[in-house]
Length: 609
Ligand code: GDP
Image (cartoon, rainbow, N blue to C red):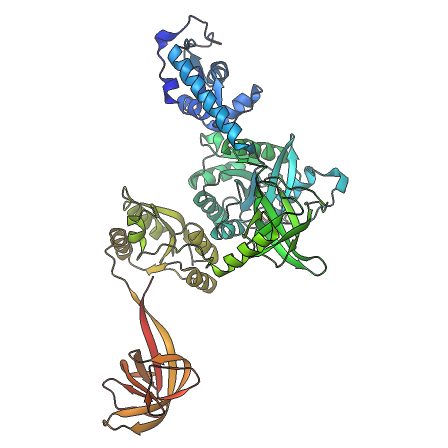
């Protein structure tokens, strides 16, 4: 495509430039016969959104990748104070390039059957800033199905219609739900609305939401809400957003912001139109002729109807009678209902529907696939049950080097929680300097305070790790990190933190060992042995003991000795292992001094990973 820009001004016809009467201050510019919206934005040095808006004003509806002709491009350029130089003559060479491109575009369009699909939107923001009320206001003012008399059903998502185009809203607001879905491997949201109350401004959860959306690469549209309030101050909000790295269009950035009042139902249409605009640029496509694929966004057991699941279709068309695999369950769709409770015969891409006919309740975030018949669905579901469905192993400072070397990882995503803002800045600066051409160190979220479940979710979703500086880890977060294998590293000296990350990136970090208790026993009797060694008669109270296992003897909660298990005996026979609930005789290396009542703790050392 670049070739199209390399035309020579000698190749021009003496045609009059459009609106050339404009002032002499206008910057002169050459435009090719055809140019994509993206290229035009780059050439004119304005945002793509502005280009699309300008074209819309002239009745031309396009998306970012679409190619427009010279006349359309000139209209836009003039609007942005450029003086368009005369149209170049299309040489034989450029004509042939253009025709090749057109041929290719037609060919790929024919092949794919791809059609635009409605965008799926999630609303995020700080608590009490009006997310729920905004969702209600949008739904009430744009009910699609008037037949149903506006009776809405809560199914986890709903669709509205704006100027003949549909938009799907997920009605569980918040970045936690959004990232939890991503952590399960499902990308559902196309655009996010960040709600900021004009009387309260940017708050910690606003900042978290921004980071979560950015980590997912999901575009943000800001709704400055509660503008009806007397103490509303939208300008302060804009400033705070800019400080957080989100510069709105009005201030020269490329984030769209809209002022709303969910209470007074003001600005709702403006918000919806802008969502369509951003969605347009995302070029969202799906093929409605394919077998359906979708994601579970809600699921429950209904006493009379059996397992129910709300599916958000993302490709293909879902129909009653379809055989489906959903996570590790399966079934044949008996009936489908939309968000007004009406029975429907098909669900196209981006449409949410409740389905009946599954054999069990699936999990939120599970994927649905329509397959040829019920037998196949059952077979696939059973097979999935046997596969470890855990997300691929997260990175840790111990395996990052291997992951980089094998090409599996090109960025180290880090969440940092610290005690004070003053610690975050130097850590951030030092870590960012460690990026190399092979791996980029990316701080996907930094915040003050303890590590929360939401931080861990973000690390899971981004396959990253968590660094804690002089702060704690909430219990729930610790548990989640353990089950999902997320590496949490604690530091209180910046130098050590940076040094560890640097060593890890070079594969030089020595593994740290953590201890795992594998069993416990209680000494109940003492016997002399033939070899004059002291044998303790013990009862295994927990776990198990094997020959060669490290052991420590505890007396009155103090460590008497640490050694290893030399021998184990049950009824005169040497054995390799004894488990919980059994008695045995035990000899440990270099120790003869047992007493009845001693506690033996058996442990192993594993590389912390
Ligand atoms: P959420 O926690 O973000 O979902 O916030 P809610 O939607 O529950 O709203 C919190 C409170 O703010 C409720 O009392 C709402 O009625 C109120 N609220 C929401 N939007 C507006 C608004 O635009 N103007 C005013 N005045 N109040 C609002």
